[in-house]
Image (tube, rainbow, N blue to C red; front, side, top):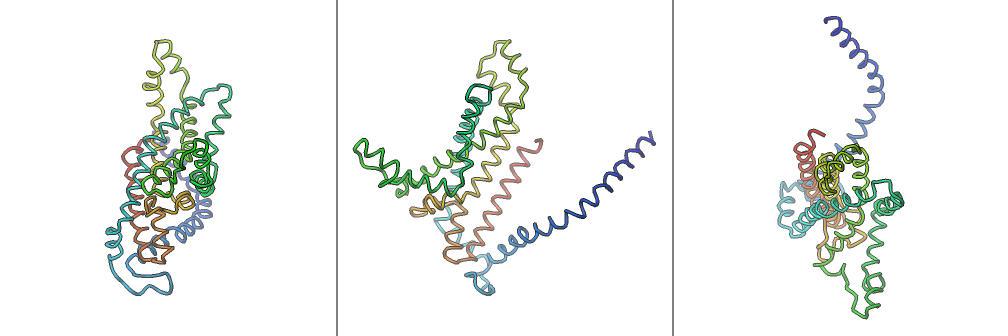
Length: 301
């Protein structure tokens, strides 16, 4: 028994010694890059958030938590924060069920399944900026697709992106169209890992399609679903590239997200201290949701 234990410990030491040169070679450069481009910018942003600074020279006007107080009193911030959580809600309630339904339709080896997978996945491959520009033209009430359809029926074309009450719903539609293909491919990968014998046994026992889906597919696909929800939450909080060319956060800040709000007020208006405060709040929200979700829902995955 003791000889077996000593053999195991010897093997572990040899394994660690074998990996040590690799760690010495690759770990310091990675830590250096991570420190330079992640840790230091985060620390600088936290430091700048306590100053009234326009980005030029050295910040000297220390104002404490005044940037954070101003942030919470700004109505546009509340709108941006609400839009982020609305995007998360729509992603979970509409986008993911749509992706799961389509994944179950095209995961089987049926004629044309690969073609449909490619068609549904193509919007995700398209760059976010390009997607925003395309849909801005589609929604255009003068020269876009909506205008062409309206002229066919001799009705006035709606200016969707100019209406502060409708613009956010137009953005949500684009988000669902853009990202459901990514989640569909995740679900397809998860479905293909499920043993087909489960379905065959359930079919022999007389289980309906809904019963097979509820009692076999959903439980075995649960880790993939939790991962997909995690991606949806984190991605929704970081949404920026598609909003700027589509609406620029307008009209009247109705389509602002946290990141576009940071860009519009912190970068465009050269209020770097105020923008840094927004970044700190966004960082805290992202870290809290990400680690909290992983701790609660993904601890066994």
